[in-house]
Length: 166
Image 1 (tube, rainbow, N blue to C red):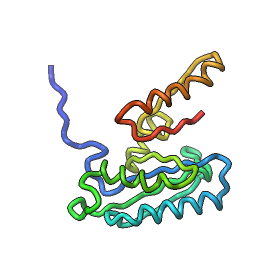
Image 2 (cartoon, helix red, strand yellow):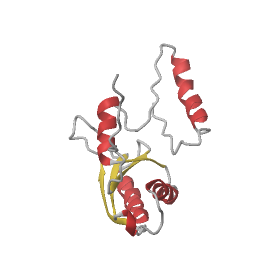
Image 3 (cartoon, helix red, strand yellow):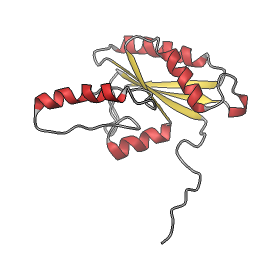
């Protein structure tokens, strides 16, 4: 029997960019969304590890990946790791970016890599690296379970963020 061998290549193998997806309340206007995203970009550009930030808010014209004005993809291009001063690892840098972005009102976020985001969405149909899909016939149970799951997941030390979508 042949054993499986990991060749050291994975979607998070030190790529030079990250994707920060920001989500706002669905009723946000385009003007408000752009204002919040401009603030988010300014906060991220303060990190000396960042070369550039490019954002895309909404995309109704792409039928395979629609997104309203309440969602923005922000691609952050990073300097080579040997030039980093704020953090030593990507996880540490992302953690500090999350703290900075937490000051934006009504904004939740998901952090991944551009290619990983595409793969996750194609495979699962969900815009997150980890997702829980709850199925059933009892509408009352279906209304309660997402809140129960969110409460339980917050106790998990590895959890970075949870966004509840219904």
